[in-house]
Amino acid sequence: MITVKTEKEIEIMREGGQLLADILEEVSKKVAPGVTTKELDALAENLILRNKAKPAFKGYGGFPATLCTSVNNVVVHGVPSDRRLEEGDIISLDIGLVYKGFFADMAKTVAVGSVNPEAMRLIRVTKKALKLAIKKSKPGNTFGDIGNTIQRYVEYQGFGVVRDLCGHGIGTELHEEPEILNYGKRHSGPKIKEGMVFCIEPMVAMGDWHIKKSADKFGYETKDGSLSAHFEHMVAVKKDGPHILSLPTLTS
Image 1 (tube, helix red, strand yellow):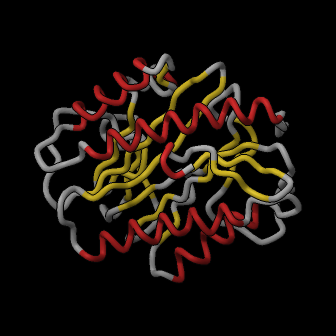
Image 2 (tube, helix red, strand yellow):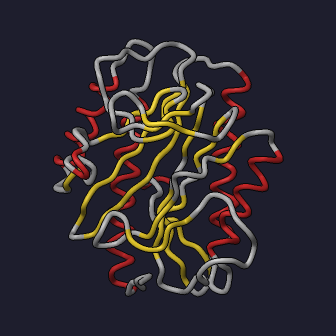
Image 3 (cartoon, one colour):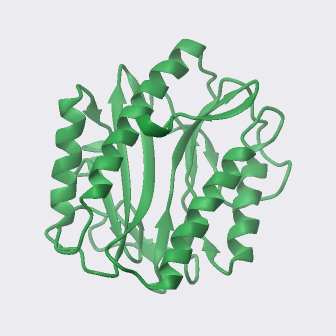
């Protein structure tokens, strides 16, 4: 069942989402050649705990860290390690917390130093796919409209949409109904209604979209080794359309 949130619940989720966005901004600023992904994870956990929230991912399904650090061909759920980032890498940072009983979840892909133009284009296309999908998140549309919008834009740009992973509803649980595919047909799937809150998260591969499990048993990476990018926002649906709940303080 797809739950509908009250105005009060949405406001709590906005507070949590804004806090999470501010934390992700701080972590993103530390991304640089020579930094380890474990150092980024330690910073993320410290900031979450300092703000009287709880990490959402640590221990979830056995995941051993607060932050998912997915480098280059790793699509999502990369485990932080002693690996040092190198000039030209790209890294997806996926982070979640629990605030006043509600979950918040978001992700972004960041360039490490100077990266090649096609890698930057991959990042821009994935970010814009999310923006276009959010615009479709209004009462009366369907979740198929969201997936179709992402797929058409990404494939038009010559990239592949990862199909084995998806977005999700969110609330008092990290993953709630519905599953939100990044591909599909217009007007298909459940209708979007006022009060729904969900995470849209396009995952895009520079090459083929097929994925496999990583050696760490948590991450997923592209089968062909091509670069991938990932962006995610938490969105509430109101009468006047979509409201992004995971924006940093200065832009909300």
